Amino acid sequence: MHKGFVQVYTGNGKGKTTAAIGLAVRAAGAGLRVYFAQFIKQQKCSEHTALERFRDLIEVKQFGAGLIIGRKPSEEDRRIAREGYDEIGRVLRAQAYDMVILDEVNIAVHQGLISVDELLSLIKNRPEGLEMVLTGRYADQKIMDAADLVTEMREIRHYHQQGVEARRGIEK
Image (tube, rainbow, N blue to C red; front, side, top):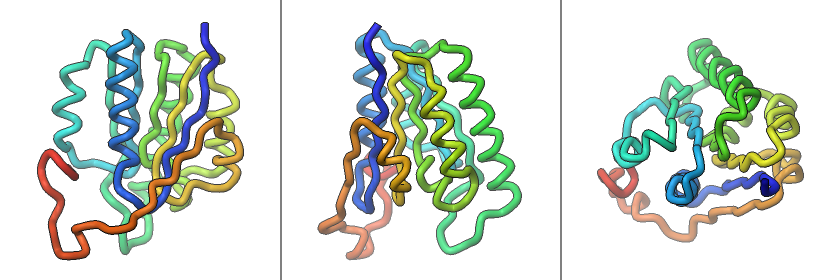
């Protein structure tokens, strides 16, 4: 069994979730089982349709009530994030997956839906060979310190600044 590492994809640039999805597909291509948990997000996008083709190896679950931009998290946001946190704990204990991806978990921590210490506990208590991937802006320094790989996506230019809406198959 190989050593499982902790990877963090953070920063204000595009590509964090996309990188995690690419890694999930690569893992599935090698016959690894992947649990892909999305915090905050609620909407089904093109990536869900694509990942559905790998349903024998990739399980996708959403634990969000929608984006938290320009509003304070609601009790519903907190409840759903808590369900996600509890589910991840069960998934880790079951040891049925080779990779666990926590998409937008850094935002969930940043917004106070789960604590830094709770996320550190998941990292610390993961099975030895499990690869764990954490995405989202605003990764806490303690989380980055606990990771084996940290990649920061930095926005230099983005066409949304010219009013381009999220496009099917590209951003959604």
